[in-house]
Image (cartoon, rainbow, N blue to C red):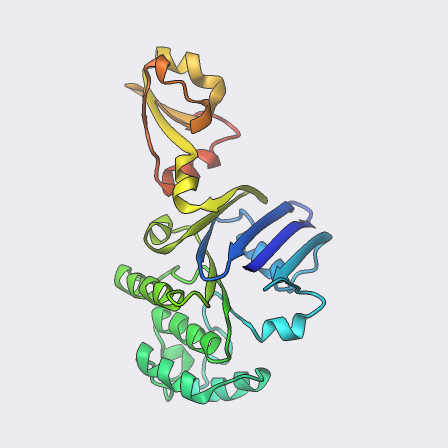
Length: 284
């Protein structure tokens, strides 16, 4: 079963557009949604949740049309966009007392357990919580009303390495029983190398690739060769950088011919993103 199906989302602004955005997340898995700042990640996530009205496209959650069943579906989704910036002078306890009324399946015991697990003092004001604690508070809210799909926008942004690592451990624990699914956007690719099962890459409003993480990485090769060798493969490279030794460039693995004698290596997610961002000019 798919926890989330996104099919053909199109949204046009004056200087930016989402173009036929489509991908699927299987139930019980973690998908990392990557792309440079401005690629359209937040716009896509808000479109999925009908926070932005799109020109066309269909979203299904647990195989049901999201728009047709929006109120019911939002009971099954936990989502967070950035920090908890509302009511910052109010105490955690007060903010929760307001939020819980929107959810029919709110469970106080589950909420208390997550506060304890995340070491959140509900008598503190929101403004007194660190960035990491605000993320965990958002997560506690999302997990206390029976949500089975988490949609999170840059949840690890601004966290120190220890706090990020702890949060990723929590994500992995949540999907262990196969019931929870997580979609989270990020530009911190090292986070995905630790916990993501699937990768969806958005570049300038278009999906470049969406598949299992290892298959995603294996789609590409990073080539290193001389200036002379560059001329033989230039037209097949997604983009490249030149240096005093020659060039380094990204290529689709299916286009690589070992007989040309150019060294190749498997790139990491960050390298794939960097070279795709230079695709238009194809040089540095």
